[in-house]
Length: 373
Ligand SMILES: Nc1ncnc2c1ncn2[C@@H]1O[C@H](COP(=O)(O)OP(=O)(O)OP(=O)(O)O)[C@@H](O)[C@H]1O
Image (tube, rainbow, N blue to C red):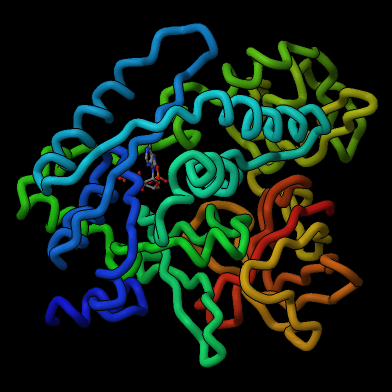
């Protein structure tokens, strides 16, 4: 493949069009965004790079993993002769992403901070501070875009089902999608690593980041405990009403959870939360029926490019960051509301989770809405 077809692949623009654009690269210090910069530099482009800084806590020192990330990002930007600027989005993160997370958790729902981080921080707060001065914002997300015959831009899935991140991008606004560029979105993770090794990028062998976006090292339960503390209540077996133990707060448990319940006579699955009574309902057995759902409701649907077509009843969907796209039909119920009828029973459907909707071939990502059950 020659270089110009490569660029067409990821940008749906020819190289000349891309050269005329002001491009900002979000450089995290990880291997994916470093290869993004390499890909652009290969085309003779010199984009400006930005490292987004978010500390773990309001008053604490910045942690050393972030320092290492910044060192890596600095080294990679120097290698390609590009400027790197550090953008502080600390306040916006804690005010917006944390507020969203804690509000949902308090209401007994299952939030997804990684999803909101793309809308509110990477394509949000960063955009307000610096991104607005650029035509395109390039990231190392495993996702692609395509332009239809009417000139509309769609978010499309990565060929790497394990790495696909369209689910994390399914709450971004249309104007954010228009500015997004995913230069490695057409690649498999192995190809990205091979390029990093071949080019001797300093982070070629670094492990992938894990955990909550930007707060990878912070334990999710500690994060919640810090804001909401503990609120002990009873754990009850759903089928029998028998009390089997105590929980320290409904917010430490997610529907579908099997591990870490710590009660004897297991396995136990979390199947329901009663927020008003502060009761955690569990079911007993290796794979209880109560841990599965086939029909559930979604509201507040956020579309990416066009509103859902009421004629479109056959779709595929994801409710968590896994490689499977589940086939289903949807029953439209009004503005942004519908019921999903999954072909197969789905484990751990929880209110508050995003249900990400794709076309039948799981090629285009159509948007996402919140599960209400
Ligand atoms: N601290 C940061 N500063 C700037 N951009 C970031 C930062 N963290 C993430 N990004 C951007 O968001 C993209 C997706 O981030 P995420 O953490 O989900 O992915 P990743 O696959 O681990 O990426 P990478 O290998 O580039 O760290 C990154 O590739 C990068 O473009």
